[in-house]
Image 1: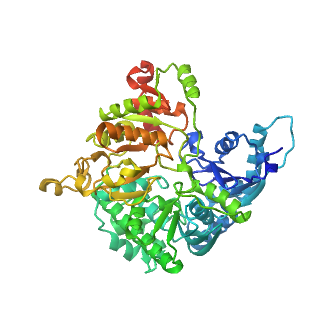
Image 2: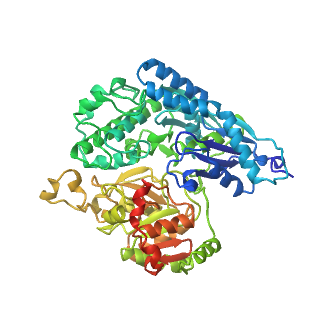
Length: 626
């Protein structure tokens, strides 16, 4: 009997051709798999058709495309094409070169996306089935809308029967900010703000202006903000953006070029702030830090105002968030602190990757009109929705490459790791199914002792090969969160920033209080200095025993050894490279950095025991990946 005849609806959602392509599989409304293409291709923010991600979703569940009822694409390409044409016509004759470049891509593939997707699916199916079978029917192909896919990714996995939904990003087809109401299995639109007026693109304009890469450097800008003072807030609000009381806004487009060129900002923007855009890798000055602080304040003000407006309009007790702006965990923390809603739930893959999942869930609940019963907590399974590898598989791999290792049962492993962490060792932790979304959540993580004064600089400069100012996040046992942070909410997906408890803070000397900018970096701020940012904040992940039992037990063992219930948790990758997916990726990253220990499930590898020829390979290779 075929899987279709079993009565269980099997739906694949895909997002691609812009950035962060992904595929997701749901069966009868249950989220089974969700993965980003970059993890397989090792090309950061890979935008190509998610061939490998889709193949994983199928093969890992013993399926072929013949078993799938629907494949749904996350947006409507023709509406995006309409927006491009109208925008370029509106600014003509400016933007000619950009228009020609865009049309070359659209006329070659994007305008015929339906045929392109079908051809890709046919090629995948041919690779999965018996070659003797020459003909087959593809699943029905559907198209969602970009912000509707975001809204679905936020509401359907949430624990709420009813909630308001706020989506904020760069741009979908037309919408850049949208509000929705979700009830049971239905999502209905309330209102939207359309391109070119975009909070996401405003933030990205400052990302570009401060010398970081758009669509990936926004995290850096957020991390830089606490080093500065918000001196330019009034200048931004007076010249760049008009904000109404209800949070709606309009940009003054004469300062920007993203709607008509290859750059984000124009000469008028640069003249306003008195400097040209910062060159990548050049010195970061107090000016850039003040800019980062200023745009962060503006972002928070708009987000809070929009949330208050939605609350007034709907009376909803719960709020769901998605879209790239929802990854701004500082803004999320501010929103939580305002207590506008009783509860907030944020999709962990809030960017475009998450729209693949949202589109699939939308098909099951709204298109197929299936009932929805929310789960306590949520239905994301901790976002652990990617590949996992058995001890047997890992041992075969390590033997093949002649990498010395020792197998340890869980109890012995956790006890030894707790002691190594206490000694100041940096550990690569590879555990269970890979996370979906941009955050490492204890499946593909680099971990360390948060009490260690040197750990932040060590990890940034010797492990991650990234800017020294960037903060690290803590993973803390869920039951112990209130002992270290002023946070009265669970934060399983590392999407909320919270203050360090006052009794853990260290008092600054008069001399230290006079320091500004990057001079603040090496001043210990608390008894857990490695995860305390210069403004006494931290991006917190709370760890639940049911969701990730092995990571929970590791942190618990560290607590028993040291009295500290938290660890540093940063993503298992180096600068410019996606988070590791396979044991091979993990071992390569381990050997290219100054990590001390690698843990692949129950296999523990010490750097000092590894083959000399591997250790002698240049760690600086990692820089070439950016």
